[in-house]
Image (tube, rainbow, N blue to C red; front, side):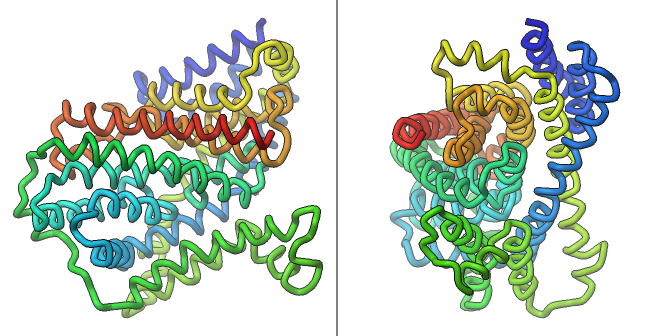
Length: 445
């Protein structure tokens, strides 16, 4: 009972300290790790070892991956490649399919680019094209927002799912595969919501500003085609490695399997993607690689995520060392919670404190020592648990979430419309993802 009460107290502390007290999540997670160890009577030397090992092991797994992913995102954004990719897709799809196309564009772009930056980048395109087509921009704005959120929370190489996979020890290739499956189902629900409901709303933003700032469709094919390589090459390599390592060895044991075994390791695959991203800016300037250039910007952006993730790993290792898994296991054996627990925990933390990344990392740290007790210790189950955590971290985006304000301010929504469209949309999309995960779990676990 002390272990359970201490865990509940630490979760409340993390949420309250980061929301009401405005404490940095890194500090909150470390204090929670120390506090949990003290309250449960863990010896000081064991507590310190658990924190150091949990922090170090987690960073060792995901540090380079997050840095490389940040480099890809920064170069895609700053070079204009992401905007050209979006504009080219919209040109092919036509104005009559703007909401659906914006959702699909957001789905692809958000894999390496943070959804906040991507929405700011792509929102003017949606507004301008909606005006030219004579339709409300609300449908496209909501579809873009939900499309960005789907991959941002559930599909690597976005840092949140990568961090959760590292903390849970899940195979990143399987996380990508099931993350894509579930996120596409969730996106379908999100697009239906955008087309059938959100498109009926009128937004108040000035159309003139949107037309003036919307990136034009460019004939520079290197930007459109080049934008695909940093995104999809790492994904294909990581998934290929997972396939090559299946017990049946479908790719054999020759050169191809050996090649994928090396290049498909997440750190190597994302580093290869980062190399492709370096070819995007034309002309390329050496200053981009300096500490004050795009390269330095990428590293600074990734540092915060790495620290928070490491702190989440430290918290999870302390929980593991306390033996709470045995306690939860005795309860879980009587109540069929399975994959719903990671979803509910992530949703509760997300709704309370706003950050999807913090919700993902915190929940992963809590769930990691409980995997066996919950019957989620197989490779497929761990991958689905990561996706369940990501799905929960969507629910719901409201006033304490910076992304809520990015979406409302850059699309011209009032606060009331933000709750009607963004908050309700993330709830529906997250719920659809949860249902998909539970159904998959029934057949795969």
